[in-house]
Length: 342
Figure (tube, rainbow, N blue to C red):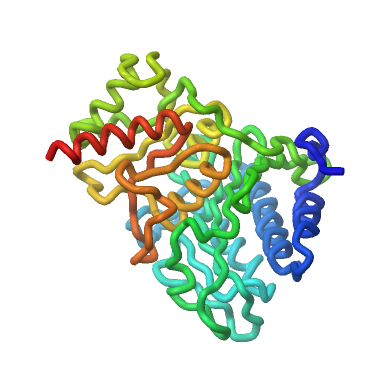
């Protein structure tokens, strides 16, 4: 007998992925074990985030990352925790992190595995000192090179070929959301037992919503179609025919999670300061797009599907417009009309 969504509520993340593995008779357990290690890293990071103000873990390290951004103490801790948790397992051939300029090799003393992983260890970390929700984002691909050490080629894969993607949001509760491309499931960490328990089975984003999310401080740098889109969301000149409420946190994981649960649209369009877009394709945009489309939503740059982009750089940036299908398709049509008129 098949299990419905209500039957899954309360089962642990470990039980859930074990049940998923049984659907594939030839599965070796390697992929399941990798997800387990990611979950353990999330528990460790969650613990540190929650006690950061008590153990002097807030503030800057004094270093900058490859993007030129100031590195927070918790950024560094989260990055090291994930690397340490997965490098020895024999599940990966190579990793990449938003915090590291180059691919992260597997140390010589550890075996190589069939997967490549990209991650953003602590998204939204500039908000840490203000106690705003932050998160971890991860993406897993099957390696495309033959044996031995993984290479840049294993990491530079389009989002459509992801085997799994997910995020962990450290907010009023710690929630892990992940997908393998079919269903999206959410698990809330119960601190009394130390387990992620299924709380949001088979998440589906509403076909349309009532909230738009964008940094309107960048308005002066937007192009005309972007301004028309945001104005249309505000004044009701959109296919839904209503004025949307504005909500913007400034932490991608937090803004995305709200959009996924309530519906609506999140936009991070290009502007004069970031003409190629601001968000990283491999560690932010592609995994979030994979999750959103598995939940029935849509993800675009405004002019092409995020999941179809072939990456050419490890830290490549793109625009991201993601959310309910109805709103995102309308946004795409506005950009298309503008392109056709040129």
